[in-house]
Image 1 (cartoon, helix red, strand yellow):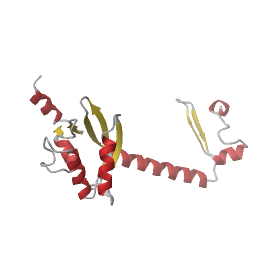
Image 2 (cartoon, one colour):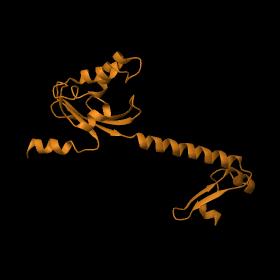
Image 3 (spheres, helix red, strand yellow):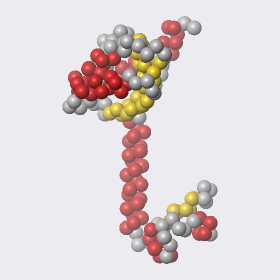
Image 4 (cartoon, helix red, strand yellow):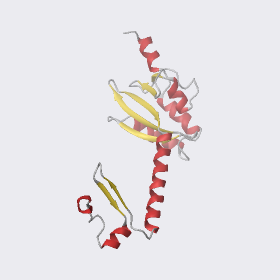
Length: 176
């Protein structure tokens, strides 16, 4: 198969990817990687050392106050023998999930997924659940919610109190 064809296909990915060889030098990456990491073109060229990329991020404040220490920590963390993943917030406000996978010959493949929207949705859901719990607790009414299709019963603490049941004592079969 033609390598140019493969590389052209990788450019179409929504996720960013970067591949390093066993000497920790960049072999290949797509434009999406550069855009997600906000790296200039000269950083995203074959032959660029992984350390150079980390140092560039440290200089612009990607890793907080301990930039130099964080560069060393990340060099070790990213170059381990096992596959792993981390989430990283960028200065631009993105939250990236980074999948780190060793490749034969001592190299490393990193893929970057923008999970900012997912995290914001999760946070809104948590806030909604907290509001719901506060409303339920503040209510003087006894509330229940029965999902008949999945046979899941929620009974508010106030309804349990009114009926003389302990929390989680009342089951859907008993409710009928």
